[in-house]
Length: 126
Image (tube, rainbow, N blue to C red):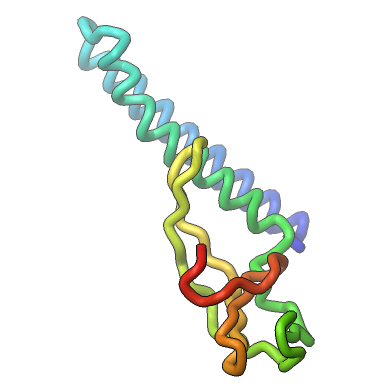
C-alpha cells in the first residue's frame, strides 16, 4: 500500500509534469499563431497520452508492486513461488502508454507465473 507521503510525492510529480506540458504547449502555440486545430491536437495528444499513462501507473501501483507479498504458493501444485524481480513492461491502453514494473513470482514445477495481486498465468500467455 502506498503511504500518504508517497502519495503526496507522486501527486506533486504528476502536477509538475502537467505544468511542464502546459508551458511547452503554451510556448509552442505562441510560436505557431497560425496553427490550425488539427495541428494543435497533434501537439497535445502525445503529451496528454504520456501524462495519462503516468497517472494510470500511479493508480495501478496504489496497492503496491507486490514485492512485499509473502507465502505465495502456486495455484496449480501448491509449491512456494519464487520471487524473480520486478520486470518492466510497456502497457498501451486507451488513456496512453506507460511503463509498469511489478513483482513477478514463478513456479519452477508448473512453469507458471504470478504478478500479484493477479492469479497465476501460464508462461507465454498475456
